[in-house]
Image (cartoon, rainbow, N blue to C red; front, side, top):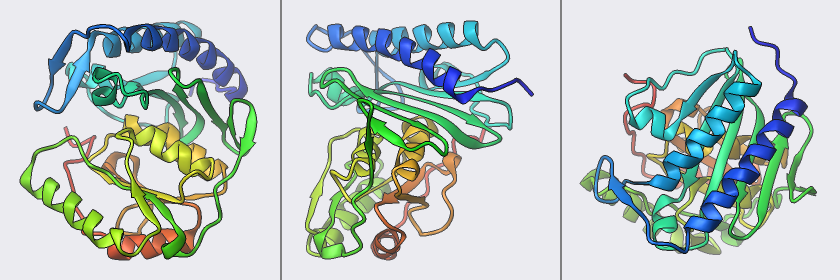
Length: 277
C-alpha cells in the first residue's frame, strides 16, 4: 500500500483547495455555463469540472499511488469504488444549486480515506472564508481555531439541519416533507443551507446540533464525517445503525443520545448505493 503521512497530505491538499477556492470565488458572481446531469435539479457547471481537474491533477502529482473518487469523474463514467488503498474523495463544488444562484453557501470538500476510514478532511467555503480541517485523532478546526460539537442531548433544544433534497422522485419528496413535518414541532428549529458538507461542518463547530440527509453521495459527506467525529460529535446511519459512506445516508449529531432520538423519528429512504455499479 502507498505510504501515507496525513499531515503532509493535509498540507498539500490545503494549498490546492485554496487555489480551487479562487476559481469558485471568481465564478460565483458571473454567468454560469450550466449542464443537467440526472435531472433538472442535478446540475454541473464548468467550475465544478475545473476545480476537480485542478485538485486531482495536483494531488496525483504529489501522491502518484493514491486513488480518486471525484463527483464529476463518476458522472463521466468512472467507477465509484472505495478500497483499502489511500483514496481522495472529492466534491469540487458542494451546493452547486446554491453556486448557480450565487447563494454563498457552497464549498469544496476533500477527504483522504485509508483502509476505508477517514484520515484527512477539508471543507472550504471560499465565499465566506470558512476553512474547516481535520486530521484523524487530532481534532477539528475552523480557520485554525479548534472547534467542538455542542454536546446537546435535548431534542426540544436542538437546531437541526434538514434536507430539502436534489431529487423530484415522488418517494424522496414525500420522505423529505414527512420528516420535516415530524421534526418541526419536536425540535428547537429546522434549517437548511442546501449543502451537505457545510451542514456537517456547522454541526462540528456547534452552530447546529444535528443534520440528517438521505440521497447524498460519498463525496458530499466523506470530509464532513471526519470533522464531526473529531469535534466530539457522532456520525451514524439515518436509521440508527453504523455509518456506511457508500449507503448515501447520514445522520450526525452533537451526541449519541440526540442522534438516536432523531433516528427513531425519521421516515427512511434508501437510494441506490454509490458502489452499486
